[in-house]
Length: 108
Image (tube, rainbow, N blue to C red; front, side, top):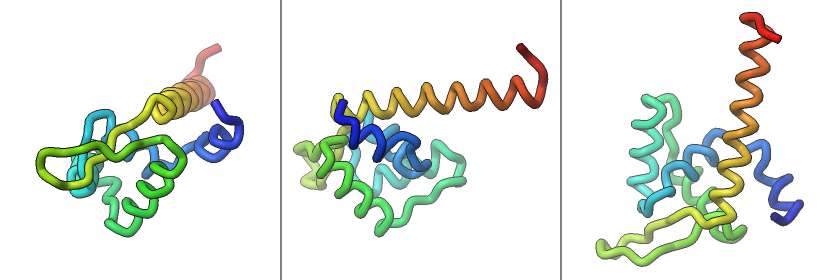
């Protein structure tokens, strides 16, 4: 993976993380916003400006791609690079949570 992209995306913002989770299957913009809202129980509500600015950057960086859709709406799907970044961030978050739990609640 390109070191510059690694530095750009790790650590990842919550909005980027949840957007990438949402496009593990093809989704159009409104479906992404709904999915993130449902997944986070309303804790994260993506606005259209935030979403489309971020999606443009993710497409330009090759993290997601536009895929053809039967509905005629522009749909997005994660790429192999995007999946790799998402997995790296998930591991980082898991380690961070483990460290916090060990310090706060005991452990090695």
